[in-house]
Image 1 (cartoon, one colour):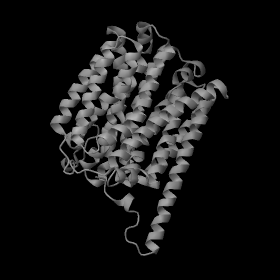
Image 2 (image 1 turned 60 degrees about the vertical axis):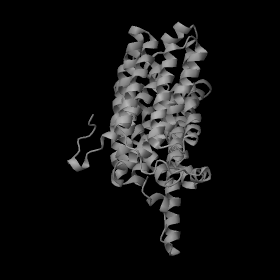
Image 3 (image 1 turned 180 degrees about the vertical axis):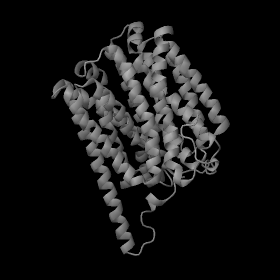
Image 4 (image 1 turned 120 degrees about the vertical axis):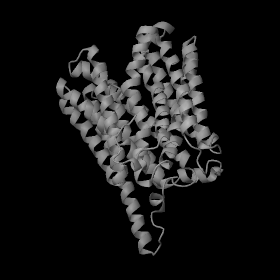
Length: 416
């Protein structure tokens, strides 16, 4: 699966990186497919649609809690072994979903599956950056994360189609098969890291998370991405009640969003490889502008489709710069934990955005205001990023003036 044709053979990405992409595709499917199965699940288990929707929230909270917990529990294990173990949990969790006799069991199985999400992407990002040269690390992250975007573009509609024709349980059986295939590919292609067996003291890992620039990176991730889910969670009523589309048009339009995510993900990786800091500030600024400008076209059917595609591009162009920022400042002990925490920050932003959008609709100015509120949230993340960059440059100047040759070690140290 060649996402971008390399200019020369020497610049070709390693196959192991695409093995990580396969795993991220499977885990991404587990997150998104339930959104296309809510009606079937509600009818079969005799629950309300709102209760079925809590299966989405339960997964997101499981990601947030599972990322740091599983990363800490597995911190002394080789990274490849961690990835394989996570895919085993993923496969078992989806099979449990397929066999769930009732709502409670399904919720527990969903949460079990979600525990793998943050740690897989966190550890996987570290492994991905270790597979390539330093100037290609952001692109490596974006290629690994392209599995997540492909899960949105292809996995979600495919899961909905399976659920419609063969029942919702067939979708989870299919994801169990995806898990087994991903497990085999990772086992065959991902190499064992040279420093896999080196134990990292817990105090050192926690000290890495406590670095001011790492904490700022986590905060900008949460706020920057929260604006996306403030809008995308309520995209169906935005399209049907304001833009004037029928219900049947929502799924094809979401394909436009998914396509934009794929483009933005790869674009963000390329930009961050060349100039990481301008890419960070620029992508967040563009995302805030796209969200704000959507407010002006909410009643235009054609323009809404264009802006939904633009939102997909702008949203996922931020992923690699944000993840790379945290990895660079978490260089050394604790990088796995910091990377997983950043994935948790993405999901906490998702939950925050969805909740805040609901507050705006039910208790605030209404549906038409979610876009500009979303823009304000992302702009807040941009402000945090700008302040972080200024602080980093100020510290570099102080270190240079004092004759310290180790200025900005965290940001200059290669990612392991």
